[in-house]
Image: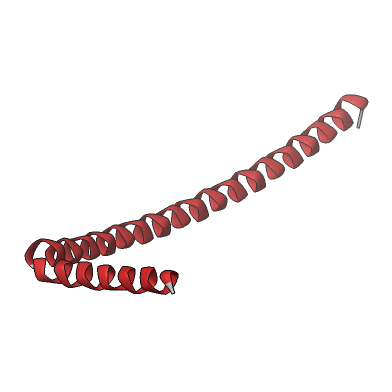
Length: 92
């Protein structure tokens, strides 16, 4: 075997090593992309659940404040009574 045959074997071996390294890197990158997609889907699911919960709480609070004016009157009375108690203690 001459020097050209040995050079061909070395070049083929080097090309095989480069191909294996590239395929390993591509497989690792594809796994990373899959994990990122799963994480993004989980975050989107959590975000949509939080938005739904916020909407329900907001609707409930608006219902209480709009329909039940008496609740606000009671809270106002309690707040004014508490304010008077504190002002009376300050005067003593």
